[in-house]
Length: 390
Image (tube, rainbow, N blue to C red; front, side):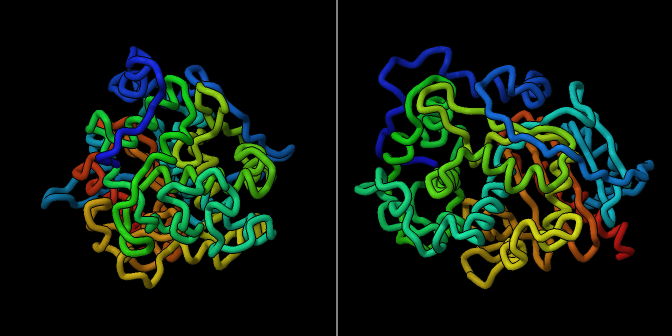
């Protein structure tokens, strides 16, 4: 996200601390950092419940091929091309394929999910709306965070945050040194209050008019959730989601170094690939786990797409690739298929019709990569088609 207004990262001069994000994300170090963020940042635990719900395992090799750019590739080639660290495939609730090519990854490794965290924040907001902790999607941000009065977000609603149509901020660009997202990252790592960075964002379009991918929008959703529930993001996620999923391991959010310390609802959740797959099963099963409705059914279904033309597949503009649409903090792929995404190649791919859930964690050398993303989507679709017999 870029802006003509300079945002205050902190009052000090730039230092090594400002470069930490670049170092953490650089290959080959990122294969280690993406599984050890709790060694690098303050954290808050997302506690699992007393009993894990077992995931049946019937894992076997998956020797299928997929076509990309007029060539046929194997999944082993996908993993090499796209620096896969974890790859878990579920069909009808059973793990049918599982591999951890990452040097430091395994079934108990908690993976840095980056913006896949946004999709989890959406689930928590849906739960809070259902419980009445949040009144309505039509509520304004300032109903819960009055400190955003007088900012570009003053009139925005929660619905606009959910679909990223607030009209606040420019393109989220990681390679522009003074962009909003880089200042956000530097403040997270080096100290200062990230709310100051978000409050300084400027309006670039009328609310509701266009899609613009924004970590700031999801960060505000997380803060609204905390204000509405009186609980931290990690505590609410534990009580309303993680314990009910039957997760194998505690997850965690890493927190900002500066105080007030806060979780990044748009990017700091870490969890095992198997537990991320459990979220996919929840989404494929209309919000139910073990016969219990955890997330409202209509909330899950609206995450598969909507009728807003500016959010349709192929209509997102410069903030999204042509094969994606957007809905409710999830990326849609047409039909009922959708995915959570995180930079450096994190995917939670859900095809309810095929009854397939795929988790792919990666350590790309760059945050975004249109070519690697297109190849990954082609491969994941092929896996789903294989199990659906399509």
